[in-house]
Length: 477
Image (cartoon, rainbow, N blue to C red; front, top):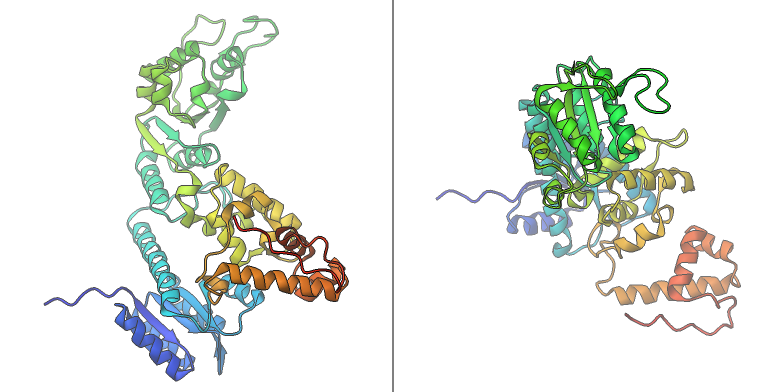
């Protein structure tokens, strides 16, 4: 009988012998293949020989620590997923672990039910990393015009997009890029052009939503001198400017019906005329069009020509909204902070802020994420972005942190108990400092913005001295 496939291969490193053995035994019973070590010095050799998926390491150990071990482990296997365990958790330690490349951070002691979902998510990350590595080995990696303007993400949706770009870039086929605003449609057009035989010729862009019909016609096809009032000289159109290259037509659904017919003719046989001219011209231009509207609905409403839709839709590349590819948010955050850095020092994101960023729905997609991170870098008090640096709407929409992951792994199971403990502690500190917010925030080890948020949340505005009555907790619901 064939033995069952293990749930994953784990290396557990902890100098507490009994804890290490108990954890290995429990995880083995859950279907994992586990090796345990009490000496962290032996871990690098084990990682080189073992082909492990996840490293589960204690933070404080004699001779080294979990962060140093994780740094060494990622040098051996960059696709390894690291989880740090500790009984001495602080935000600073969590930030350092995440900067090193830790996937998660769990406080000891913890229950088996706490660590299992963390391990399952870690195994999914490991699977995606290995799959992405495999795809890069068999498919030529896309080239981009600069480090800033590139397609970022390892999710299945992003992999499908990059594979389509790979296949279509070397052809002259017309491409229709579809997706909500802010998802990166122009990046796809740039990638198609930059990986094609036309890469040394111009890439020209035009947005149909920003120009009136007559101006858009002149912009696309050019005009002769005297063709209309103000046309004091002959002007070549973008089809001429893009000769031999690529023309990216954004928001194509906003094009007027009469202009749609002229665009269709260029796509069919390459012929067009300047405004005010009777002379035929021929364009050798590849067209990439984009829209955030469902063109099928526009066709049914007689706002878009069906024949033009079919001609544009030779190859369709659909970009998903960011809420449908949340697993890409950490990679996008790292990319944006690296390529759109505000100031001299690079910024990190603490675990709770990253949780909020991953949980938010991002109606403005990647464009909104980039704007939020730019704002956060400006507002951050140090070189680490916290929840306090994010817009209120983003933080509130994400909701409270779930129990059992990251720095809240050891939190009480009943959130009402935790709220009451937090409220009473804030009240006590405010009374001790006679309502002085600056001193109270310093004593609590939080920023004044965080303290004001807690005061508002628990309705503590009247607490100024030790004789104040204990305010009632806010009503549930």
